[in-house]
Length: 389
Image (cartoon, rainbow, N blue to C red):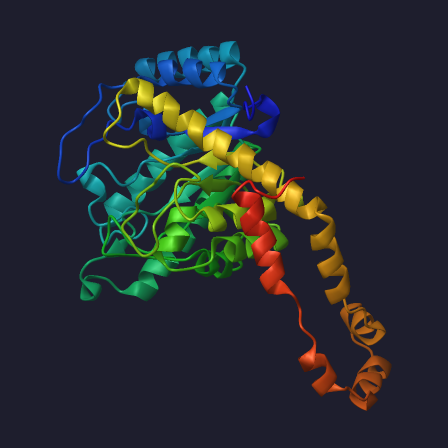
């Protein structure tokens, strides 16, 4: 089958994506439960490389130590039999009522302490499963009533928690890094660190910034009306793009978590082009949900659709790169400049004097057409399937 996923594509799904039962704030579930073992086996048969999980996707929040150990052992066996790995693990600090005012930023110090307790146990379990990336999404770290919290204290508390956990990982000798995920709102009215840019700035203030990166999500960036390719590019250039969360979304809506490629096809194309032409080698993880209209068979249609759409867009991105007319336009716009190259190589007084003394014909530079209309049209024709390779 064309566009059939393979392990080397490094596709990953969160257990929660396929386990989603179609429940929403206005309606009950439309699908029966799918257990983690069934999900892993089925995805493994489909060529998926890895899965990700919250602690409570596998281990109930009130599980005994014996039950925890049994589930971890059985899940590890299922992963091995399916030829799959853990792309990342995370902690559910949003579902249980104890987190109604946040975890690390709760006003209640006992809740903050319990959050550390829960995360440390989840990190231990993640290491047992072979994970080397641990994600933090602070879905309840925020407010509906701004006067309910001192926001400066909230930022400090989040930093204190992450610093403590970085030290814990080092103290245990774990090969583990942290990845932070931004979202502007939902389920809280406003969530702290609402954009990926805010997280990049925050990471620089941590005790071990080299241990911490980000995993931006398409839907979350579009909820903030941002350009996904630009956001991911900044993270990639900074060496902080630890993994990517892929889905689709209509601009400025609630978090829809639609099948990757089902909306904003140009934006998805630009994002795949960025990842595939700039050396990103991390997991391509889908964080989306099947439509509420689907039965269990539809869940697997959803999963295959995410992967096929990525592979189709990857093929078209490489076609765009190889197109002779695209290369011609780029070459014509590649205005080499020795003075700029000297400046880019580092400051020197000589280069500064040379640039200041140079004469620039700004009228001629301004009058030159760049043919971006043509570049855009070529991309459209490739996406619409009428431009042959």
